[in-house]
Length: 97
Image 1 (cartoon, rainbow, N blue to C red):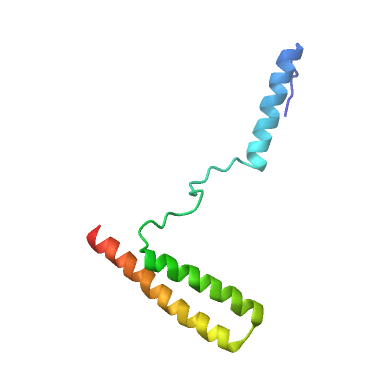
Image 2: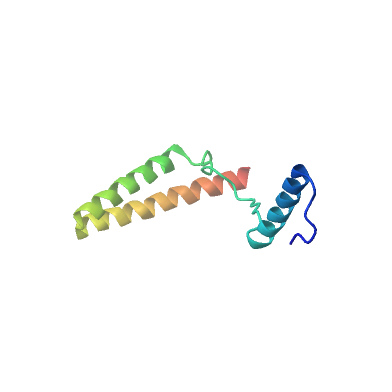
């Protein structure tokens, strides 16, 4: 709050800027997060695991479209296989890496 306004226009503008900035900092402080941006790298995945993930996603889209129990069973089998390959790739990298 300004109790003694400045005499010149430039000083008044500076005073106003300081006041508005301090009020905004109280009401809505700037956030500085440390969140990573972009997609995480999956270079450690084996080619088989990548192909299994693609197949799993394709089968999921088919199941969602048809809502057939047979498609869901095939999709779930692909999920288990893809997860096995992903975990095997991860374990191989972390044990040798």
